[in-house]
Image (tube, rainbow, N blue to C red; front, top):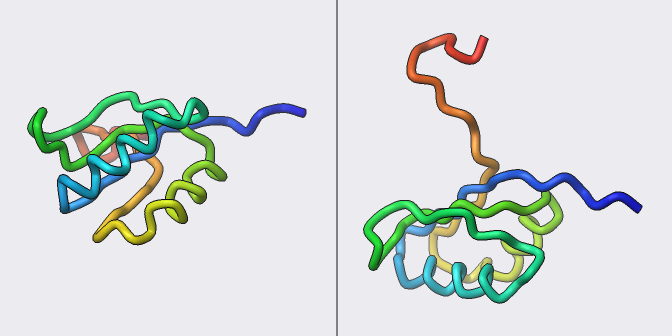
Length: 85
């Protein structure tokens, strides 16, 4: 059976302590890959995580009590309108 395709997700929390807890959980799970964090080194506000859709759903369930936590697929950014055409 083929493994589901992994993609990059942005995991954001307004509370740095909540995100620190999520990052610790990501680091302890070998199926998830923490690629980067965004924000101050001592208090990032966003983590970039490589995982599949099912893993993202599980992560949402595991940390549903974290205040104002969002997990969404990373989208490419284009510097100019219509840059993705």
